[in-house]
Length: 320
Image (cartoon, rainbow, N blue to C red; front, side, top):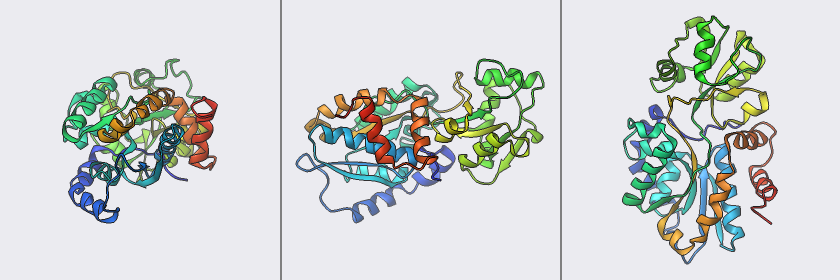
């Protein structure tokens, strides 16, 4: 099963982004010497994960439906590879996450990234000014760290948010969370949730796993392994819908917002301005629940990402 993790976190990103200059040189070396241009096809890429393949295929299908030639480089690589390729002009368009702007521009401590609208405005402004990169409107979804619970927690408040979890814990509710060591220890993850919402998990309320694969933490929650009834996840993980788990909403902004959005080179958008008009309604339709369900078809049911993308676009009349 391919993990649906679609963005990288600050602890990983600092190490990865330190090598971007080197990666950029490699990208230029391995791609054809000529960059994508207005005279050639629009080069659509994506990251290597499940959601990257889903969104990259959606973008490519929608652009092609406008009569524009498309060169697909779906699942090209991780964030640093794809971002470097865009900056080098070797690709033209791909789906990225707003919260990664904090890493791209070395501003990951800026509180703007924890607000969906402010984070989008910030990365849009910075990328336009420094790189002539355009961020089109993002989806109303957030692929950030979340805590997901089973539906059978006795006496859990009806409002499925983290302040409800704090109240549940204060009343002595039974709770045990499966999570990675990074999630438990990183100040930006569980400690940020605890500080923001005023609760503290004890050692016996944690099942700490060495890896960061959310498929394992969610499976532990769904199956009640070692008494677990909650799991670390990312907001658009397909396993959430498939396993009947609920991601608790973070309405106080403990976490950075990672909203998916199409990112395109300004020169290509100038040549094909109708790309924006075509993609905006598509991404506007991609709610958190919609992405969870579509990701589940790929990561859980094993369907082809391109087929799932095309089926969704046709069902919503974005494709004939």
